[in-house]
Length: 514
Figure 1 (cartoon, rainbow, N blue to C red):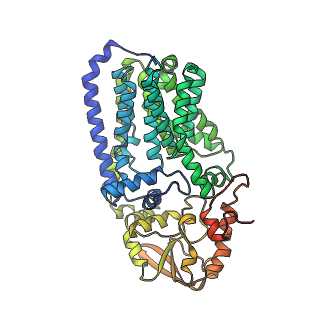
Figure 2 (cartoon, rainbow, N blue to C red; figure 1 turned 180 degrees about the vertical axis):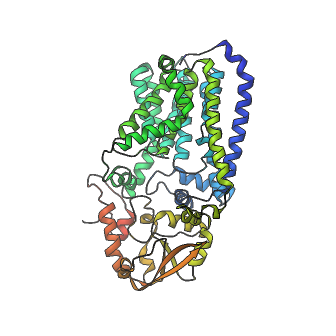
Figure 3 (cartoon, one colour; figure 1 turned 60 degrees about the vertical axis):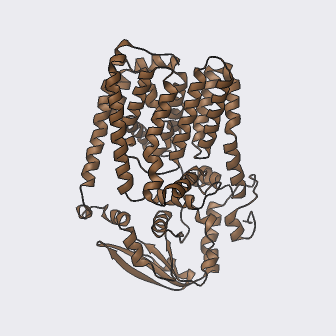
Protein backbone atom coordinates (compact mmCIF):
# COMPACT_ATOMS: atom_id res chain seq x y z
CA UNK A 1 0.00 0.00 0.00
CA UNK A 2 1.41 3.38 -0.95
CA UNK A 3 0.83 6.70 0.85
CA UNK A 4 -1.85 8.93 -0.65
CA UNK A 5 -1.39 12.55 0.38
CA UNK A 6 -3.17 15.65 -0.79
CA UNK A 7 -2.41 19.17 0.45
CA UNK A 8 -6.11 19.97 0.77
CA UNK A 9 -6.56 17.20 3.32
CA UNK A 10 -4.58 19.01 6.03
CA UNK A 11 -7.24 21.75 6.15
CA UNK A 12 -9.86 19.16 6.95
CA UNK A 13 -8.09 17.76 10.01
CA UNK A 14 -9.88 19.89 12.61
CA UNK A 15 -13.29 19.34 11.06
CA UNK A 16 -12.58 15.63 10.70
CA UNK A 17 -11.63 15.37 14.37
CA UNK A 18 -14.89 17.02 15.37
CA UNK A 19 -16.81 14.68 13.10
CA UNK A 20 -15.13 11.66 14.67
CA UNK A 21 -15.78 12.80 18.23
CA UNK A 22 -19.38 13.74 17.52
CA UNK A 23 -20.27 10.62 15.55
CA UNK A 24 -18.41 8.28 17.91
CA UNK A 25 -20.06 9.71 21.03
CA UNK A 26 -23.56 10.08 19.58
CA UNK A 27 -23.62 6.56 18.16
CA UNK A 28 -22.23 5.13 21.41
CA UNK A 29 -24.97 6.81 23.47
CA UNK A 30 -27.67 5.61 21.08
CA UNK A 31 -26.40 2.02 21.14
CA UNK A 32 -26.23 2.13 24.92
CA UNK A 33 -29.85 3.32 25.10
CA UNK A 34 -31.12 0.64 22.74
CA UNK A 35 -29.14 -2.07 24.55
CA UNK A 36 -30.70 -1.10 27.87
CA UNK A 37 -34.30 -0.84 26.63
CA UNK A 38 -34.80 -3.36 23.82
CA UNK A 39 -35.98 -6.82 24.95
CA UNK A 40 -33.75 -9.82 24.46
CA UNK A 41 -34.13 -11.67 21.15
CA UNK A 42 -34.35 -15.41 20.59
CA UNK A 43 -30.82 -15.82 19.27
CA UNK A 44 -29.39 -13.74 22.10
CA UNK A 45 -31.27 -15.84 24.65
CA UNK A 46 -29.92 -19.01 23.03
CA UNK A 47 -26.36 -17.70 23.19
CA UNK A 48 -26.99 -16.61 26.79
CA UNK A 49 -27.35 -20.28 27.68
CA UNK A 50 -24.06 -21.01 25.98
CA UNK A 51 -22.59 -18.52 28.46
CA UNK A 52 -24.31 -20.25 31.37
CA UNK A 53 -22.77 -23.58 30.32
CA UNK A 54 -19.27 -22.72 29.00
CA UNK A 55 -17.87 -25.43 26.78
CA UNK A 56 -15.33 -25.98 24.01
CA UNK A 57 -18.13 -25.78 21.45
CA UNK A 58 -21.88 -25.76 20.97
CA UNK A 59 -24.50 -27.33 18.72
CA UNK A 60 -24.29 -24.87 15.82
CA UNK A 61 -21.04 -22.93 16.14
CA UNK A 62 -17.65 -22.74 17.84
CA UNK A 63 -17.56 -21.44 21.42
CA UNK A 64 -16.28 -17.85 21.42
CA UNK A 65 -19.60 -16.04 21.95
CA UNK A 66 -20.42 -18.39 24.83
CA UNK A 67 -17.08 -17.60 26.44
CA UNK A 68 -17.69 -13.88 25.94
CA UNK A 69 -21.13 -13.99 27.56
CA UNK A 70 -19.76 -16.09 30.43
CA UNK A 71 -17.11 -13.41 30.99
CA UNK A 72 -19.68 -10.59 30.96
CA UNK A 73 -21.98 -12.44 33.36
CA UNK A 74 -19.10 -13.11 35.74
CA UNK A 75 -17.79 -9.54 35.71
CA UNK A 76 -20.76 -7.22 35.15
CA UNK A 77 -23.78 -9.27 36.19
CA UNK A 78 -26.49 -11.42 34.70
CA UNK A 79 -28.40 -8.75 32.74
CA UNK A 80 -29.30 -8.04 29.12
CA UNK A 81 -27.27 -4.84 29.23
CA UNK A 82 -24.11 -6.57 30.46
CA UNK A 83 -24.11 -9.29 27.81
CA UNK A 84 -24.74 -6.66 25.12
CA UNK A 85 -21.97 -4.34 26.24
CA UNK A 86 -19.36 -5.90 23.89
CA UNK A 87 -21.60 -5.07 20.91
CA UNK A 88 -22.14 -1.53 22.18
CA UNK A 89 -18.37 -1.00 22.33
CA UNK A 90 -17.53 -3.00 19.19
CA UNK A 91 -17.57 -0.10 16.65
CA UNK A 92 -15.16 1.85 18.85
CA UNK A 93 -12.80 -1.12 19.01
CA UNK A 94 -13.00 -1.65 15.26
CA UNK A 95 -12.38 2.04 14.65
CA UNK A 96 -9.28 1.88 16.84
CA UNK A 97 -8.06 -1.21 14.95
CA UNK A 98 -8.58 0.50 11.59
CA UNK A 99 -6.72 3.60 12.78
CA UNK A 100 -3.79 1.61 14.14
CA UNK A 101 -3.56 -0.45 10.95
CA UNK A 102 -3.82 2.40 8.45
CA UNK A 103 -2.18 5.42 10.10
CA UNK A 104 1.33 4.46 8.91
CA UNK A 105 0.01 4.81 5.36
CA UNK A 106 -1.86 8.09 5.77
CA UNK A 107 -3.28 9.41 9.04
CA UNK A 108 -5.92 11.61 7.41
CA UNK A 109 -7.21 8.90 5.12
CA UNK A 110 -7.20 6.45 8.06
CA UNK A 111 -9.40 8.89 9.99
CA UNK A 112 -11.80 9.12 7.05
CA UNK A 113 -11.95 5.31 6.98
CA UNK A 114 -12.98 5.24 10.65
CA UNK A 115 -15.55 7.99 10.10
CA UNK A 116 -17.13 6.26 7.10
CA UNK A 117 -17.40 3.03 9.07
CA UNK A 118 -18.93 4.75 12.10
CA UNK A 119 -21.47 6.55 9.91
CA UNK A 120 -22.92 3.29 8.60
CA UNK A 121 -26.45 2.97 10.10
CA UNK A 122 -25.71 -0.53 11.33
CA UNK A 123 -23.11 0.90 13.71
CA UNK A 124 -25.77 3.17 15.22
CA UNK A 125 -28.45 0.53 15.68
CA UNK A 126 -26.91 -2.90 16.19
CA UNK A 127 -26.76 -3.97 19.84
CA UNK A 128 -27.50 -7.70 19.51
CA UNK A 129 -24.91 -10.12 20.88
CA UNK A 130 -24.41 -12.94 18.35
CA UNK A 131 -21.73 -15.30 17.11
CA UNK A 132 -20.75 -12.53 14.69
CA UNK A 133 -19.69 -10.21 17.51
CA UNK A 134 -16.40 -11.97 18.38
CA UNK A 135 -15.92 -12.98 14.73
CA UNK A 136 -15.95 -9.32 13.64
CA UNK A 137 -13.63 -8.31 16.49
CA UNK A 138 -10.99 -10.99 15.96
CA UNK A 139 -11.13 -10.65 12.17
CA UNK A 140 -10.45 -6.91 12.43
CA UNK A 141 -7.51 -7.49 14.77
CA UNK A 142 -6.09 -10.14 12.44
CA UNK A 143 -6.33 -7.83 9.43
CA UNK A 144 -4.88 -4.91 11.39
CA UNK A 145 -1.84 -6.94 12.45
CA UNK A 146 -1.35 -8.19 8.89
CA UNK A 147 -1.56 -4.67 7.45
CA UNK A 148 1.10 -3.53 9.90
CA UNK A 149 3.28 -6.54 9.08
CA UNK A 150 3.03 -5.79 5.39
CA UNK A 151 4.16 -2.22 5.98
CA UNK A 152 7.48 -3.38 7.40
CA UNK A 153 10.03 -3.52 4.60
CA UNK A 154 12.48 -5.94 6.25
CA UNK A 155 11.15 -9.36 7.17
CA UNK A 156 12.56 -8.94 10.68
CA UNK A 157 11.57 -10.13 14.14
CA UNK A 158 8.92 -7.42 14.49
CA UNK A 159 7.36 -8.39 11.15
CA UNK A 160 7.29 -12.06 12.11
CA UNK A 161 5.70 -11.10 15.43
CA UNK A 162 2.92 -9.25 13.61
CA UNK A 163 2.34 -12.19 11.26
CA UNK A 164 2.12 -14.46 14.32
CA UNK A 165 -0.38 -12.10 15.97
CA UNK A 166 -2.46 -12.01 12.81
CA UNK A 167 -2.56 -15.80 12.81
CA UNK A 168 -3.43 -16.00 16.49
CA UNK A 169 -6.33 -13.60 15.97
CA UNK A 170 -7.45 -15.56 12.90
CA UNK A 171 -7.54 -18.69 15.06
CA UNK A 172 -9.72 -16.84 17.57
CA UNK A 173 -11.98 -15.78 14.69
CA UNK A 174 -12.27 -19.45 13.69
CA UNK A 175 -13.37 -20.23 17.24
CA UNK A 176 -16.11 -17.65 16.72
CA UNK A 177 -17.61 -18.74 13.40
CA UNK A 178 -16.63 -20.70 10.30
CA UNK A 179 -16.88 -17.63 8.06
CA UNK A 180 -13.35 -16.87 9.25
CA UNK A 181 -12.32 -19.38 6.58
CA UNK A 182 -13.28 -16.77 3.96
CA UNK A 183 -10.85 -14.35 5.62
CA UNK A 184 -8.11 -16.98 5.53
CA UNK A 185 -8.86 -17.63 1.86
CA UNK A 186 -8.59 -13.89 1.17
CA UNK A 187 -5.13 -13.98 2.74
CA UNK A 188 -4.18 -16.94 0.57
CA UNK A 189 -5.27 -15.13 -2.61
CA UNK A 190 -3.31 -12.04 -1.60
CA UNK A 191 -0.06 -13.87 -0.86
CA UNK A 192 -0.35 -16.17 -3.88
CA UNK A 193 -0.92 -13.30 -6.30
CA UNK A 194 1.09 -10.44 -4.87
CA UNK A 195 3.43 -11.39 -2.00
CA UNK A 196 5.10 -14.67 -2.76
CA UNK A 197 8.33 -13.25 -1.37
CA UNK A 198 6.57 -13.12 2.02
CA UNK A 199 5.30 -16.71 2.03
CA UNK A 200 7.41 -17.39 5.13
CA UNK A 201 5.37 -14.78 7.00
CA UNK A 202 2.15 -16.31 5.66
CA UNK A 203 3.30 -19.77 6.76
CA UNK A 204 3.87 -18.46 10.30
CA UNK A 205 0.43 -16.83 10.23
CA UNK A 206 -1.21 -20.14 9.30
CA UNK A 207 0.80 -22.03 11.93
CA UNK A 208 -0.30 -19.65 14.69
CA UNK A 209 -3.93 -19.93 13.57
CA UNK A 210 -4.00 -23.74 13.83
CA UNK A 211 -4.86 -24.04 17.57
CA UNK A 212 -8.33 -22.65 16.77
CA UNK A 213 -9.27 -25.36 14.27
CA UNK A 214 -7.57 -27.98 16.47
CA UNK A 215 -9.82 -27.11 19.42
CA UNK A 216 -12.88 -27.19 17.19
CA UNK A 217 -11.97 -30.55 15.64
CA UNK A 218 -11.41 -32.08 19.09
CA UNK A 219 -14.83 -30.82 20.19
CA UNK A 220 -16.55 -32.18 17.09
CA UNK A 221 -14.88 -35.56 17.52
CA UNK A 222 -16.44 -35.89 20.96
CA UNK A 223 -19.83 -34.34 20.09
CA UNK A 224 -21.04 -36.10 16.99
CA UNK A 225 -19.58 -33.51 14.60
CA UNK A 226 -22.45 -31.20 15.54
CA UNK A 227 -20.89 -28.09 13.95
CA UNK A 228 -20.18 -29.93 10.70
CA UNK A 229 -23.61 -31.57 10.59
CA UNK A 230 -25.30 -28.20 11.07
CA UNK A 231 -23.18 -26.02 8.79
CA UNK A 232 -22.51 -28.45 5.93
CA UNK A 233 -25.40 -30.90 5.96
CA UNK A 234 -28.60 -30.22 7.89
CA UNK A 235 -28.98 -26.51 7.12
CA UNK A 236 -28.34 -27.04 3.41
CA UNK A 237 -30.92 -29.74 2.72
CA UNK A 238 -33.30 -28.57 0.04
CA UNK A 239 -31.21 -25.52 -0.90
CA UNK A 240 -31.63 -24.75 -4.60
CA UNK A 241 -31.21 -21.91 -7.07
CA UNK A 242 -33.78 -19.11 -7.03
CA UNK A 243 -33.33 -15.87 -8.94
CA UNK A 244 -34.50 -13.86 -5.94
CA UNK A 245 -31.52 -15.00 -3.87
CA UNK A 246 -28.73 -13.23 -5.80
CA UNK A 247 -31.02 -10.24 -6.28
CA UNK A 248 -31.55 -10.07 -2.52
CA UNK A 249 -27.79 -10.22 -2.03
CA UNK A 250 -27.24 -7.29 -4.39
CA UNK A 251 -29.94 -5.25 -2.65
CA UNK A 252 -28.56 -6.08 0.78
CA UNK A 253 -25.04 -5.03 -0.18
CA UNK A 254 -26.33 -1.79 -1.69
CA UNK A 255 -27.98 -1.02 1.64
CA UNK A 256 -24.93 -1.95 3.71
CA UNK A 257 -22.58 0.13 1.58
CA UNK A 258 -25.22 2.91 1.90
CA UNK A 259 -26.70 4.64 -1.16
CA UNK A 260 -24.49 7.78 -0.90
CA UNK A 261 -21.26 5.78 -0.68
CA UNK A 262 -22.39 3.42 -3.43
CA UNK A 263 -23.31 6.33 -5.71
CA UNK A 264 -19.92 7.97 -5.21
CA UNK A 265 -18.13 4.64 -5.67
CA UNK A 266 -19.87 4.11 -8.99
CA UNK A 267 -19.20 7.68 -10.10
CA UNK A 268 -15.54 7.36 -9.10
CA UNK A 269 -15.08 3.75 -10.22
CA UNK A 270 -11.98 4.65 -12.25
CA UNK A 271 -10.35 6.11 -9.15
CA UNK A 272 -11.29 3.01 -7.15
CA UNK A 273 -9.83 0.74 -9.82
CA UNK A 274 -6.65 2.84 -10.09
CA UNK A 275 -6.10 2.57 -6.33
CA UNK A 276 -6.12 -1.23 -6.32
CA UNK A 277 -2.41 -1.74 -7.16
CA UNK A 278 -1.38 0.36 -4.16
CA UNK A 279 -3.94 -1.25 -1.85
CA UNK A 280 -3.79 -4.87 -2.84
CA UNK A 281 -4.45 -6.34 0.59
CA UNK A 282 -7.51 -4.15 1.17
CA UNK A 283 -8.66 -4.90 -2.36
CA UNK A 284 -8.46 -8.65 -1.69
CA UNK A 285 -10.28 -8.25 1.63
CA UNK A 286 -13.14 -6.58 -0.25
CA UNK A 287 -13.22 -8.43 -3.57
CA UNK A 288 -12.73 -12.03 -2.41
CA UNK A 289 -15.59 -12.05 0.16
CA UNK A 290 -17.88 -10.15 -2.23
CA UNK A 291 -17.30 -12.76 -4.93
CA UNK A 292 -17.55 -15.67 -2.50
CA UNK A 293 -20.93 -14.58 -1.17
CA UNK A 294 -22.11 -13.64 -4.66
CA UNK A 295 -21.47 -17.20 -5.83
CA UNK A 296 -23.05 -18.64 -2.68
CA UNK A 297 -26.13 -16.46 -3.17
CA UNK A 298 -27.16 -18.51 -6.21
CA UNK A 299 -28.06 -21.30 -3.77
CA UNK A 300 -28.40 -19.71 -0.32
CA UNK A 301 -30.06 -16.58 1.00
CA UNK A 302 -27.11 -14.54 2.28
CA UNK A 303 -27.84 -13.20 5.74
CA UNK A 304 -26.94 -9.60 6.43
CA UNK A 305 -24.76 -10.67 9.32
CA UNK A 306 -22.75 -13.08 7.17
CA UNK A 307 -20.72 -10.27 5.58
CA UNK A 308 -20.13 -8.12 8.65
CA UNK A 309 -16.66 -9.42 9.47
CA UNK A 310 -15.48 -7.81 6.20
CA UNK A 311 -17.67 -4.70 6.45
CA UNK A 312 -15.11 -2.23 7.79
CA UNK A 313 -12.54 -3.01 5.10
CA UNK A 314 -14.84 -1.78 2.33
CA UNK A 315 -15.08 1.64 3.94
CA UNK A 316 -11.31 1.68 4.44
CA UNK A 317 -10.76 0.98 0.75
CA UNK A 318 -13.26 3.70 -0.15
CA UNK A 319 -11.53 6.24 2.10
CA UNK A 320 -8.16 5.60 0.45
CA UNK A 321 -9.48 5.45 -3.11
CA UNK A 322 -11.88 8.40 -3.38
CA UNK A 323 -10.47 11.74 -4.56
CA UNK A 324 -9.84 14.10 -1.65
CA UNK A 325 -12.56 16.51 -2.72
CA UNK A 326 -15.18 13.73 -2.56
CA UNK A 327 -14.50 12.55 0.99
CA UNK A 328 -16.56 15.20 2.75
CA UNK A 329 -19.47 14.75 0.32
CA UNK A 330 -19.45 11.02 1.05
CA UNK A 331 -19.45 11.64 4.80
CA UNK A 332 -22.33 14.12 4.55
CA UNK A 333 -24.40 11.73 2.47
CA UNK A 334 -23.77 8.87 4.86
CA UNK A 335 -24.59 11.11 7.84
CA UNK A 336 -27.92 12.00 6.24
CA UNK A 337 -28.67 8.34 5.61
CA UNK A 338 -27.79 7.43 9.21
CA UNK A 339 -29.88 10.37 10.45
CA UNK A 340 -32.95 9.02 8.66
CA UNK A 341 -32.53 5.75 10.55
CA UNK A 342 -32.23 7.60 13.85
CA UNK A 343 -35.41 9.56 13.13
CA UNK A 344 -37.32 6.38 12.34
CA UNK A 345 -36.00 4.81 15.55
CA UNK A 346 -37.05 7.87 17.56
CA UNK A 347 -40.52 7.61 16.07
CA UNK A 348 -40.75 3.95 17.05
CA UNK A 349 -39.67 4.68 20.61
CA UNK A 350 -42.40 7.32 20.91
CA UNK A 351 -45.11 4.71 20.30
CA UNK A 352 -46.84 2.63 22.98
CA UNK A 353 -47.98 -0.99 22.92
CA UNK A 354 -51.50 0.18 22.10
CA UNK A 355 -50.17 1.97 19.02
CA UNK A 356 -49.48 -1.43 17.47
CA UNK A 357 -52.74 -3.10 18.44
CA UNK A 358 -54.21 -3.11 14.95
CA UNK A 359 -51.06 -4.44 13.26
CA UNK A 360 -49.91 -7.98 12.57
CA UNK A 361 -46.84 -7.34 14.71
CA UNK A 362 -48.84 -6.77 17.89
CA UNK A 363 -48.83 -10.41 19.12
CA UNK A 364 -45.08 -10.68 18.58
CA UNK A 365 -44.48 -7.36 20.36
CA UNK A 366 -46.51 -8.50 23.36
CA UNK A 367 -44.58 -11.77 23.51
CA UNK A 368 -41.32 -9.81 23.53
CA UNK A 369 -42.22 -7.07 26.01
CA UNK A 370 -44.51 -9.09 28.29
CA UNK A 371 -42.53 -12.31 28.55
CA UNK A 372 -42.40 -12.21 32.35
CA UNK A 373 -46.18 -11.89 32.63
CA UNK A 374 -46.76 -14.69 30.12
CA UNK A 375 -44.41 -17.08 31.92
CA UNK A 376 -45.96 -16.17 35.29
CA UNK A 377 -49.41 -17.15 34.06
CA UNK A 378 -48.26 -20.56 32.80
CA UNK A 379 -45.80 -21.59 35.51
CA UNK A 380 -46.94 -23.79 38.40
CA UNK A 381 -44.92 -25.48 41.19
CA UNK A 382 -43.95 -29.01 40.24
CA UNK A 383 -44.84 -28.50 36.57
CA UNK A 384 -42.08 -28.59 33.93
CA UNK A 385 -42.31 -25.73 31.42
CA UNK A 386 -41.35 -26.39 27.80
CA UNK A 387 -41.86 -24.70 24.43
CA UNK A 388 -42.35 -25.82 20.83
CA UNK A 389 -39.29 -24.04 19.38
CA UNK A 390 -35.88 -22.82 20.49
CA UNK A 391 -36.69 -19.09 20.25
CA UNK A 392 -39.50 -19.04 22.85
CA UNK A 393 -37.79 -21.73 24.92
CA UNK A 394 -34.58 -19.69 25.16
CA UNK A 395 -36.43 -16.47 26.01
CA UNK A 396 -38.59 -18.14 28.69
CA UNK A 397 -35.49 -19.73 30.15
CA UNK A 398 -33.72 -16.38 30.26
CA UNK A 399 -36.68 -14.82 32.05
CA UNK A 400 -36.82 -17.65 34.57
CA UNK A 401 -33.03 -18.10 34.71
CA UNK A 402 -33.85 -21.78 34.32
CA UNK A 403 -33.24 -23.87 31.21
CA UNK A 404 -36.45 -24.52 29.26
CA UNK A 405 -36.33 -27.49 26.85
CA UNK A 406 -37.97 -27.74 23.43
CA UNK A 407 -40.76 -30.33 23.26
CA UNK A 408 -40.85 -32.12 19.92
CA UNK A 409 -38.53 -32.62 16.98
CA UNK A 410 -37.68 -28.95 16.43
CA UNK A 411 -35.57 -27.75 13.51
CA UNK A 412 -31.95 -28.07 12.42
CA UNK A 413 -31.12 -24.78 14.16
CA UNK A 414 -30.09 -24.52 17.80
CA UNK A 415 -30.08 -28.17 18.80
CA UNK A 416 -28.41 -27.48 22.14
CA UNK A 417 -31.10 -29.58 23.83
CA UNK A 418 -29.50 -32.62 22.22
CA UNK A 419 -26.39 -31.87 24.29
CA UNK A 420 -28.00 -30.83 27.56
CA UNK A 421 -31.44 -32.39 28.05
CA UNK A 422 -32.09 -35.94 29.24
CA UNK A 423 -35.83 -36.41 28.68
CA UNK A 424 -35.83 -39.66 30.67
CA UNK A 425 -35.60 -37.50 33.82
CA UNK A 426 -39.11 -36.18 33.09
CA UNK A 427 -40.73 -39.62 32.94
CA UNK A 428 -44.05 -39.57 34.80
CA UNK A 429 -43.99 -35.79 35.36
CA UNK A 430 -46.48 -33.12 34.41
CA UNK A 431 -45.32 -30.88 31.55
CA UNK A 432 -46.80 -27.68 30.13
CA UNK A 433 -45.82 -26.86 26.55
CA UNK A 434 -46.47 -23.21 25.78
CA UNK A 435 -47.76 -22.42 22.26
CA UNK A 436 -49.08 -19.34 20.49
CA UNK A 437 -51.39 -21.16 18.10
CA UNK A 438 -54.24 -23.48 19.14
CA UNK A 439 -52.47 -26.81 19.66
CA UNK A 440 -53.46 -30.10 18.07
CA UNK A 441 -53.85 -32.46 21.02
CA UNK A 442 -53.36 -35.56 18.88
CA UNK A 443 -49.74 -34.48 18.40
CA UNK A 444 -49.15 -34.61 22.16
CA UNK A 445 -51.47 -37.40 23.34
CA UNK A 446 -49.13 -40.35 22.55
CA UNK A 447 -46.58 -39.05 25.03
CA UNK A 448 -48.77 -38.54 28.10
CA UNK A 449 -51.33 -40.40 30.15
CA UNK A 450 -53.69 -37.45 29.66
CA UNK A 451 -53.58 -34.06 27.94
CA UNK A 452 -55.66 -30.90 27.99
CA UNK A 453 -55.46 -27.40 26.52
CA UNK A 454 -55.17 -24.36 28.78
CA UNK A 455 -56.04 -20.94 27.34
CA UNK A 456 -54.52 -17.66 28.49
CA UNK A 457 -54.47 -14.03 27.38
CA UNK A 458 -51.91 -11.25 27.70
CA UNK A 459 -52.82 -7.68 26.69
CA UNK A 460 -55.55 -9.13 24.49
CA UNK A 461 -53.26 -11.65 22.77
CA UNK A 462 -54.31 -15.29 23.23
CA UNK A 463 -51.80 -18.04 23.93
CA UNK A 464 -52.07 -21.63 25.02
CA UNK A 465 -50.41 -24.41 26.95
CA UNK A 466 -50.75 -28.13 26.49
CA UNK A 467 -50.74 -29.70 29.93
CA UNK A 468 -49.68 -33.31 29.80
CA UNK A 469 -49.71 -35.44 32.92
CA UNK A 470 -47.73 -38.64 33.24
CA UNK A 471 -45.04 -38.09 30.61
CA UNK A 472 -44.25 -41.35 28.79
CA UNK A 473 -40.55 -41.29 28.06
CA UNK A 474 -40.41 -44.65 26.17
CA UNK A 475 -43.05 -43.39 23.73
CA UNK A 476 -41.26 -40.03 23.38
CA UNK A 477 -37.96 -41.80 22.77
CA UNK A 478 -39.47 -43.84 19.96
CA UNK A 479 -41.65 -41.16 18.38
CA UNK A 480 -39.63 -37.96 18.82
CA UNK A 481 -36.04 -38.81 19.68
CA UNK A 482 -36.06 -41.50 17.00
CA UNK A 483 -37.14 -38.94 14.41
CA UNK A 484 -34.43 -36.53 15.61
CA UNK A 485 -31.82 -39.26 15.25
CA UNK A 486 -32.93 -40.16 11.72
CA UNK A 487 -33.21 -36.55 10.59
CA UNK A 488 -30.23 -34.81 12.21
CA UNK A 489 -27.71 -37.52 13.11
CA UNK A 490 -26.99 -39.09 9.75
CA UNK A 491 -23.29 -38.66 10.48
CA UNK A 492 -21.04 -39.82 7.60
CA UNK A 493 -19.23 -43.02 8.53
CA UNK A 494 -15.91 -41.56 7.32
CA UNK A 495 -15.96 -39.10 10.25
CA UNK A 496 -14.33 -40.70 13.31
CA UNK A 497 -16.07 -40.12 16.64
CA UNK A 498 -15.03 -40.39 20.27
CA UNK A 499 -18.36 -39.21 21.65
CA UNK A 500 -21.90 -38.07 20.85
CA UNK A 501 -24.04 -36.95 23.82
CA UNK A 502 -27.34 -37.44 22.00
CA UNK A 503 -26.44 -40.87 20.62
CA UNK A 504 -25.10 -42.06 23.96
CA UNK A 505 -28.40 -41.19 25.65
CA UNK A 506 -30.49 -42.51 22.77
CA UNK A 507 -28.88 -45.91 22.21
CA UNK A 508 -26.02 -46.13 24.71
CA UNK A 509 -23.37 -46.01 22.00
CA UNK A 510 -21.17 -43.37 20.40
CA UNK A 511 -22.58 -44.27 16.95
CA UNK A 512 -26.10 -45.71 16.91
CA UNK A 513 -27.02 -48.38 14.35
CA UNK A 514 -29.44 -47.13 11.72
